[in-house]
Length: 136
Image 1: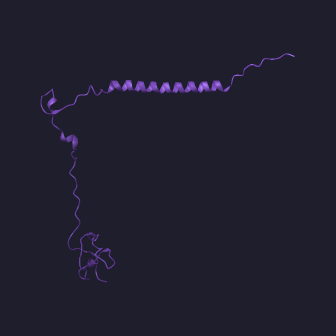
Image 2: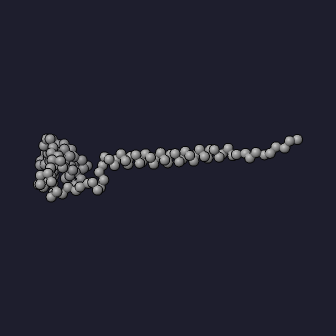
Image 3: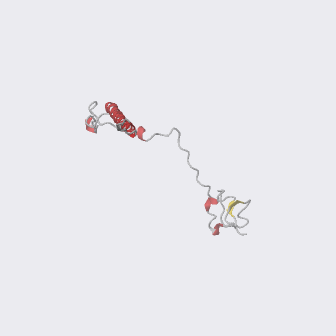
């Protein structure tokens, strides 16, 4: 009988772990490269803080005058004049507060004894006051 020498069996998990590790390293390098490329591209399009100059009224070298503020850019002018909001109709009218506190239209509210009449169909919101109610 022949004796066989045992061959060390390499673990099948080892190549899988190696592939996972290499994949993670490649992903991190890919992200780092993209960040670097992005920063290089944006560095050319925007000036750094050292390159920026502050414009003050005394530093206008082209005209030597203080620049004026254009008000049209800040407050746009309307194209048409605004329509005024109508004021509620006041004075005597055909509307009055009924005995239940609602505003109703009457043919002649003074004749039936209503203490206050309105030209506004909502009675100017004064029907909550019982002293404005018409008698039964």
